[in-house]
Image 1 (cartoon, rainbow, N blue to C red):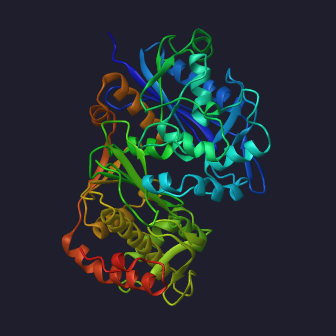
Image 2: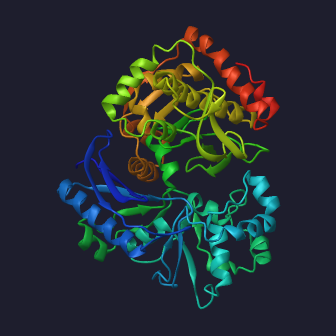
Length: 491
């Protein structure tokens, strides 16, 4: 009998993507369909019918390419904090209100006050774009009456596949206020907020079987009826799974427009600044702590908007020859959330604002080095919060295509680095599907996650980079952004 195929579905902001891999992690089929958003000021919506329709189309294309190969299971990930209201049978009542929609921003303080003790215990504060304030916005409009149910974005797709409403998972439910310590909805907090718990879905751990492909979905997608559909995770957690960072001390650093870190720990970290928050892991009694900085490769695009790939390659070669790199905080816009919380923070390069000036090579080197400094400081914060940070670190995101930057980051961290072959959320869901059916997520990741390259730090280079890093810490401390204890960090 042929070995099973594992399928992951990623419902993102711009597209729905489905991917199938075999037991060795080889990509067998992939398909994507573009999504359309509707934006109006602070509002950002999508049509939930599009999520179902486009996921069905992408899965049908994948199934056709598989030509009848057996499918072991599939899982779905989506954006964190995207929610809608449905009827009891799962029929959407509202558009999907997206993860960055801030129409309910004024209610974030209400949600924070009502559950302050719990949110503090969980290590975060309610944010303006999170799902719980959106639920309060619907409450104030009177939309929670008459059998309304809240659903998260992946629930819509999973329900279409299994033919009935499904439970949410703990990962997507985090921003709706689910208590990850007690593993239940916090009824006392909901009472203070005048929300009936019956509005909220059942919640299960990621990897729990939600149902199987129903006959109607089998006809629409071409997937075998009876194929298990398992509860997924948010897209960032899915990306961590695709990087194979599932052991305590291992981390995934995603460097795209912004920089995000996620790792694995035995205990819930204690970060009094609120910069670190944690998901429940899908395996064992573990936690997935992390944070997302507002800095990242966006600073490169901001300073060098017309640079194509050849131009960026030339800038990288020139940056490698720069001997004196000025201190830089590569922040575009205003405000930072990780590795410190500073609403008034602004980017700088040397003694001035974040700007190219008359030396583009030096400015480019400073931005790339500045991101590496932020990354090292992020690990210092995580260590101070009680996290193991001994590595290895998987580098993913668009910036991982720059080999010189990868080695710079490796040397700055002083940790071994892995570069996964297929670092995308859809693969992470295939890993989760395989681990759920096989009962061993780590073993599934070892089989399915393929590493294209490994890097090791050069101790001499690490030592040579430390003076610049300490100057960076001092510059942040002088501006009052950084906890003095972290400003004194030493290797």
